[in-house]
Length: 162
Length: 150
Image 1 (tube, each protein chain N blue to C red):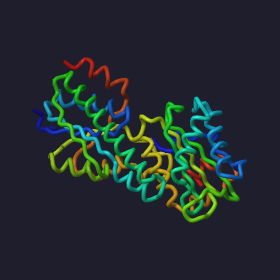
Image 2 (image 1 turned 45 degrees about the horizontal axis):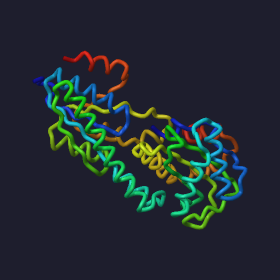
Image 3 (image 1 turned 30 degrees about the horizontal axis):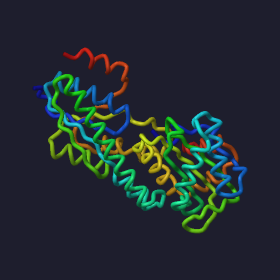
Image 4 (image 1 turned 90 degrees about the horizontal axis):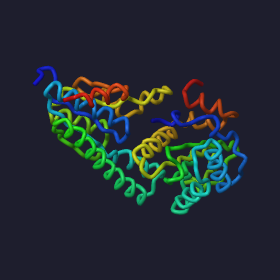
């Protein structure tokens, strides 16, 4: 096991881009002999805010919450299979709450020393700089953060992993 | 993904030609159809109106966020309508809507849909920005205001 990175957390945000991060995380965990966890946060804070702002009805919030939980399970199952194919066990964590808060909490609880996240949204306005939840987590976590880009390069690396 | 990733001037109506809620929603759906993002205009319109029938998405201070999920789009799509004189939208505070954000998502992209609606909810908290948008006289101006370049 590498002394530099022992415990890796990959954040799965429910996008296809997150799968690139998951593939990269499996490659890194296997290469370094590190323990890998994958976290999906069902963003119930955002759902609550949408009800509060009256954009969502309460019924609608429940419907989306159910769908997001199903998404979480689906994405984490996929991440599990990505690891299994390369004999990399992955600790799957499915939690609800605020994205940045839950990422930070998980990092502390599991003594994570490297957070892997998906490519951030392009900042197109000054307001975006203060809004993106993943970026907020990136700025506030106590460990190092690796941002995965370039899926075209990542997938062949994963494919060639023994 | 954020709002500016999917907005183009082709899906921004400045000003909206419509004078009532139903026509305004139809006009914005037509913009999405013209931009090639919608396979079935009626399906999208019906989905939005079914949601509106459960409770108006007219918020406070002149904002409205009609939205729906439907298989008539493959990717999340957004259109904006500016109504300088306001449109009666059954809003929470009874004020007419001057800024209408239409958001349509495929059923399997709930996470992205929630993120985009959250961004708009966040945006509507900037009263100065909302006033600037409502006063915009072109789609280019709307985009530049959203980019924070004004």
